[in-house]
Amino acid sequence: MQAPQQSVIGTLSPLAITFFMAFVLVTLGITYWAARRTKSAAQFYAAGGGITGFQNGLALAGDYMSAASFLGIAGLVSLKGYDGLIYSVGWLVGWPIVMFLISEPLRNLGKYTFSDVVAFRLRMKPIKTAAAIGSLVTVLFYLTAQMVGAGSLIKLMFNLPYEAAIFLVGGLIIAYVLFGGMLATTWVQIIKAVLLLGGATLLVVLCMAQVDFSYPALFSKASSLYGAKFLEPGGLVTKPLDAFSLGLALMFGTAGLPHILMRFYTVPDALEARKSVFYATGFIGYFYILTVTIGFGAAVLVGQKAITAIDAGGNMSALALAEHLGGGVFLGFLAAVAFATILAVVAGLTLAGASALSHDLYAGVLRHGQSNEREEMRVAKVSTVILGILAILLGLLFQKQNVAFMVGLAFAVASSANFPALVMSVMWKRFTTAGAVASIFTGLTVAVTLIALSPTVYEDVFQDGKVKARAAASARAVRLEGYARDAARAEADLQGRILAATQGLAAPGLPEPARVKRTAELKGLQADLALVQDGGLPAALAEARAARTTADAAVRPAPFPMKNPGVFSIFGAFFMGIVVSLLTREKEAEEKFEAEKVRTFIGIGAAGASGH
Image 1 (cartoon, rainbow, N blue to C red):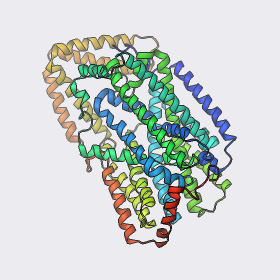
Image 2: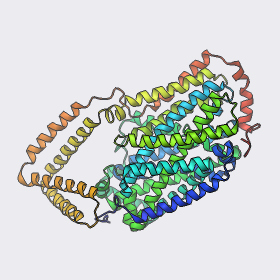
Image 3: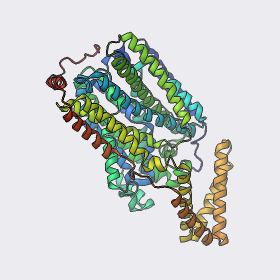
Image 4: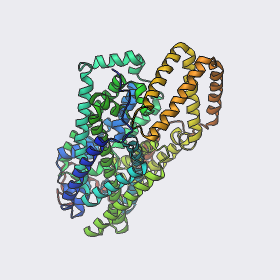
């Protein structure tokens, strides 16, 4: 069970380009079809409320199953084993909350965005302003992370220039959203979800066929290769409070993401809204089970050394497994699906951001809810172009930055700024306008501030150079310590790796960037071998340990020690919402509470399928 000696990942693949072009042509055809049916604001924002529960369930799954989930979780599991599951479980358990607490009130009380629900019995202008700011911050953080991830992944998978990838993604999402609105975006999500679920299922079937469709056999092989600890917790998450906080942010953040919440207006009624969450939960749960199997399969069948040789973070493990089991054709198909996944998620985010600008800020705040439909549509389309251009600029601006923290920040803001205000507005009679505004801004401020002071930003971003130097010094010290424990084994291993690297460099058609990278790796291996053979290892090891200590001391520790602030920012948002509401009574809002309850549970007065 060895990986192919030479992977074509990172080289220009005609097959991958062909599959991707087919996807783009089909989705542009759908956009043309949708554009002819998108004439009103209801059709632009909510596809006219004509999407069925099953279709919306697939679209929700498509919106939620990002490339980060597909490639990132499989990679985490392949390198860290059991602890990679925390991300699968955290992202999944938010869905029951969406189903039982959020979906029905959203569909019965709102119109196009979640702020419609919060503002139902409260004063519109302050609520719309605060909610739009919370939504836009969430969307922009998420959008930036997706765009930078798109550029990096496409560069790695297709060997296309980063800038070309950013402009390609930006141009396509503007076309999808501008001309096809929610209808085109929904069908792009559905096609992507079907392709992703189908591709991942085939990959798992091929993988399990290698171990006679036996999970015990798969885990047994993983244990024999990497030790029993690979199947036990503690490999990735070591602080229980941090794990709890991360879990809270993932769980409640799902119920506060603007592009997820606005999908509940695309179905005809509350029953279809619940059905769509039911289907989405099933699809997403199934998908995360697949990613875990793919991660363990890659670790066993491809091997961690081969995976990290392609990408040190393990993000290419699913594609490496596809190449190992299905050759270039299957690799090309899955690479195109990963690209399509990015496009679909970015399109959903762009539409949510445009809705916050046009429906909440322009129509709700600037025009006091009195704008006509044509005017709002025009503003929505201008907002789409602005957000598309902004996404391209952010993708180019943050090209060299580590933006992984932005996904965590998006979930932290969504769970802290959006979710508490949404829940309290529906369930608590005494909730007031001032309480809602205080809750939203407290959640937003605390989440952003604590993340800026956390190791994720304070160390990894603000002290990027020093952190990289610390990681390099630590890796060198650990590597030399390994050589020192068993010099004979290290010598044999290094000789084997030098032979493989030399053969790799001789491969015809190797792109220049890959040649430069592999040449540098070969020189590093040869230098290590010389240390082991020439007796210079003890001195080099002492020097490496001293360098590690110096590099450790150079990095200033973060003032806030946790990586995710969810436990504090969510609590702070609820606390401020409750305290300020108790101090500022709003009789008109209390009088409307019973009517709101009736509409929440029965749907009397809710907008119809095409009557938004």
